[in-house]
Length: 448
Image 1: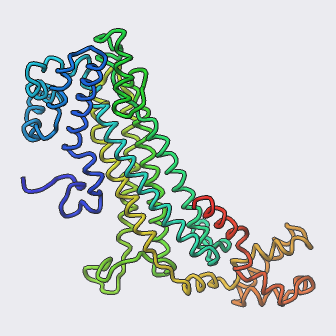
Image 2 (image 1 turned 120 degrees about the vertical axis):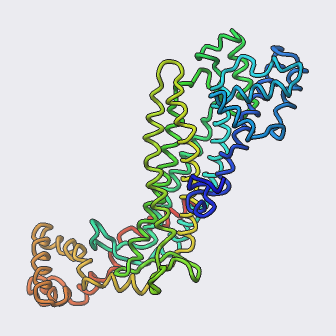
Image 3 (image 1 turned 180 degrees about the vertical axis):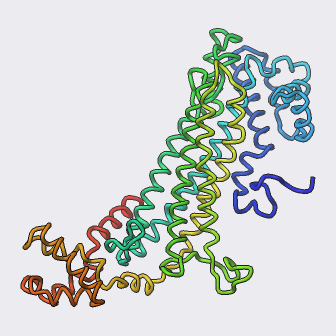
């Protein structure tokens, strides 16, 4: 083999699409270890319930040490058998000696593989939770740092009214906090799978429910109390939440890409010397990390539809639908974790150009505060009349090239109502940020 084919495992580009920690969670080694953990726990539970001999459980638990198995050899046997678990079961049986007959007692393949996947997702959710906490802290720090800094608020790509940079990050912090809460809720819902061939646990009769309950307790999972062989809604829910989190990261990154444009230049991706440049244009400083996060968010956007498709199982078991999850779930966690980790780095190292922010805020000559003038005059003229009057003066300023302040001061109607000093106050963006600072303070206080 000359190299890895999947970009997540690429030695050249893998760092852009993955994290070492999350790849380890879904590695072959971890997958086998989780299957073996479930088989060992099942044997121990059944021994405790007097369904198999205690000596059998001891032998099976010893046999389930992952260092006893060769992954390449198991892979070849799985390929030859066209079955993902029977060669593993056979190997455990062989390593259990005379007690091999008690391996996998009353279980079906999907019980072991689903429970193993849940163990992997639990570890993956723990990693995602920690990463969200770091991203949240980075957003809160930026919100607190820039709580009062006025900047141009933009709607539909155009200057709208002033906001503060702190408000932008406070609102993003609230969004990240919601993701964090949902991830914690989902982690607390992870169920064991133990239902037998068609969800009836017929192999164990009335003892089946007790085995499932004890198995859930031993593995630290929720007792599902029923089969979820075809009930894949939680898998789809988790995959969707990971994608939603990645979408927030993509939004943050895309905003920075746009605000780093040469024509705007308000924010910039923090970059070490020699990074983010062009292979041919020495003046370029490209937002490489931010654009990579956008790419990860887009890659994640197509994973939930696959997980939703995998929900549509036929009858009591459906290999075609189930197999899709073996690719979708690990890819989702790996892409998703990379997006959050990279976004934390992006936000934490963000560079802010206060002078450029002020320059852009003044770019329209006070027009960004036209609403402030209109609403102030509305108390004397009525909102509709004030709106028309200000709109006419804006048109005049644009046609003549005169500043907005000048046309306001020269207009007899406005001059009779407001002094030049009052107009100057109205046109100061720092005076028209509404409750932005209070909102930042409230959000920061609640999140800290």
